[in-house]
Amino acid sequence: MISRRAFIGAIAGGLAAAPGVSAPQARKLPRIGYLTGGSIELETDWISSLKTGLRELGFVERENVVIELRHAAGQGERLSELAEGLIRSKVDVLVTAGDSATLAAKKVTRVVSIVFVTVSDPVGIGLVPSLGRPGGNITGLSDLHGDLVAKRLGIMKDLVPSAALIAVVVNPANPSHTIQLKNLQAAAPAAGVTLLPREVSKPEGFEGAFAVFKRERAAGLIILGDRLFLSSRTRIVELMIASRLPTMFTQRRWVEGGGLVSYGAIFNDVYRRAAFYVDKILKGAKPGDLPVEQPTRLELVLNLKTAKAIGLTVPPPLLARADEVIQ
Image (cartoon, rainbow, N blue to C red; front, side, top):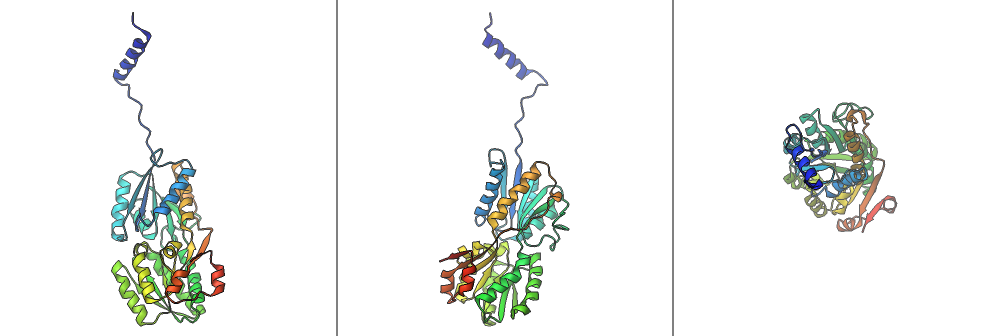
């Protein structure tokens, strides 16, 4: 007599061996790619905000979603290659950080869904035809850099009321910088200043730029938002302090690292919100049907320790307006 357990085992074994009967397939996990022209190390907390947003929507890394990170570490020429690699790895959604990474991804694919974060002017640089109806395979979140440059110039003038010459560092490889510089030039007469633009496309170019600013006696400096610039943050802050040159930056990461002042979007908010777009797309939405969003919160951050180091007294009204003051 065959026991009941042996009988069931024999049946199971027979099914496993039977031709045409396949074992259950492992469920395919959705794959999210992340591409930046900067460095993962400098963007760790922003990426953590993206992952937090995903967890809140039910996507937990290594449990039910795979996240692949790629970075160019300030070498913009590598972005197309890195984007192609992520596409070959069959990501379902590609999150791109900044103008250059998003433009590189757009050139590589018109099929894979792209969600961009911290792009300054999506319409102006040709990513989408409109914010309300982006169309195609791209949507995401702007950081408003193009619209905020005039405000940053005004804050610089508040910091240094006597300033007549304000320097500006631009990256010629960043298409949004042409737009931002034009906006600055349009705002300069009302602020009573002349601009001194200087192009920097390589990390070693900052020393020469600061030498020009010193020779021309610039009273202040505006650093436009760019992943290359952020990758050189430590050196730029060192040069700023050595030159005793009041400098305006785009977001708090610079001020936390010793910069003087920043005004702009809260990047952690933007990244966390990007998870909403990823979730919608993974559930079947088309990127082109999701309107591009702009940040709802902006912040002014000041570093008083740096102000003291460069011999600058921050006017009390500006100090009172700051959302955060680093002592």
